[in-house]
Length: 513
Figure (cartoon, rainbow, N blue to C red):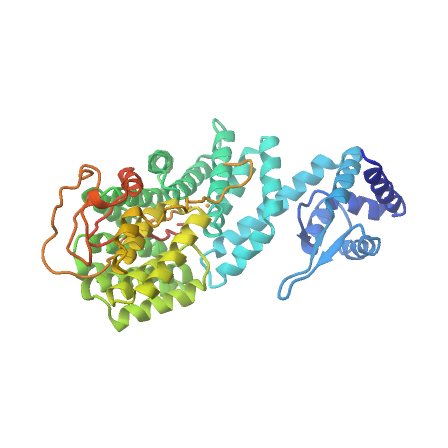
């Protein structure tokens, strides 16, 4: 330890020694919180450990006066407490020496499990972004609780906390981290009795994250495991969620018949149980499938019914999703119309520039304005969509968005740049957590058209026709698959489906059942 570090440590120890017994105990317990925390959290943990109710406030004030704890405030948010890391490390030493470390960590983990499970049912409420933001502020403490539960082999706690957070991880762009924790929870709970339902939920949550990372092989594996567990439990509604994810994998691979069968099965399960949310999401996906196959009246009907259901549920995320599907169905059937613009504007008003559906809205709007000849606006919109997908790790969105980028570039008259690919010099960047690899599913939204054209689809002899349903129409500067950049054809060859006449698919959500 350097002389400067030793001097700082002596100062902290001197301040600690000036505290009375109650203040010292509070100081030690505060050290389990990572980053920052609320006074409410401190009071809950201390009272659960036996402290008298209402005493924490005065003791925290004393620690703030002695510069052992800092208080931070942001407008519109509850004040938060934090320790400098050096002070926190000293507190952990004292907590360990007192023999209170395990009990304090256990109480800390129990508090954050309760918090996450109280927030989870509110994910589809009108204040969903508020609750996501709350979990974001508590993320460091949630990680600490998960890590402690894994190290202490608290399998049920790990499963419950992971299950409560999967939708948060998806919506707040923590795909790789969420995948890590969900996989760890499953590994730690193998062979543990009494957690079958939790494992089914966590497998389903993992499937939705894998789908968004375009890891289709693992998506299918995990969803099939989830389905088997739900079937063993006799839970047909639970089973319908991973079935829906499998349907979207089939859609992405151009297996329309199988996808339709799976979605119709899901719809039957949800309808029988009067699960309106599940029915609404399934109708959205059927709208996407019908649109892909040119059944536009059915696509519009399904999307409109879905929108009505979501509005009745007062679910803003679902409403946004249904608006996007309805806009797409109308664009496919009618081309650019005021109604399409109105639906997308309403959708953007709901996204408020956040959430993973934002880039899908931007991408479809880019195609709408491109069909109207506004290549400058189309370029701006599609670049926003592509930047979002790259930065936040939604790899499934990238190939289709790149194709739209290429179309915009070609429409601007730069054929060489279009052939080179808009990804040149801009590798995809997935969000990753340093040292670490979001009952829901996030699903794929069916093709979005670049424009309208009459007449049948034409086969250009696509070399990937065995793996892609590559039905190219004469829209704008449509080129056969062989003219696409090699890097893009490699991406599409790994199971992605692209109908070049209707355009690439974009992603959306399935909400927990």
